[in-house]
Image (cartoon, rainbow, N blue to C red; front, side, top):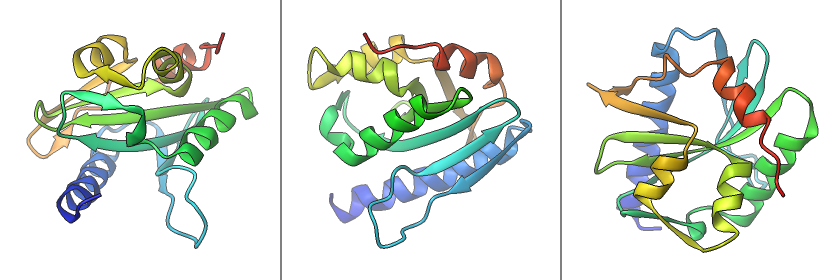
Length: 158
């Protein structure tokens, strides 16, 4: 990854963290930091009824390629999703040319990528579970709630 992409990715993670705080949702967020091992994902979100493992990505492209994610990240988020009755694995993808964030369950994303390695951003957006729009310097996540998570947890890989 180029330095410019890495810098933007770090800025996006910071913006997303600020957005979770500004959402006034009844939740806590924990950023997973480097431990010398491969990090399973970027953050853990604890909601009233769900524990969420979130892998966060940003892209300038008009598509999402499976190579945007590392294999161990996908495995970790998938395993977490299936581990406990209240755990949910999600991916958050920023389309920064549109100032939008798409949140999708790992199960739904894996279904999409089972047919192809590249998904058009429009199709990714249409199939995501939640869309947040940027207002000022944060994304509006205040409508993200247990109903969204209940729906994502109900997803099964078949």
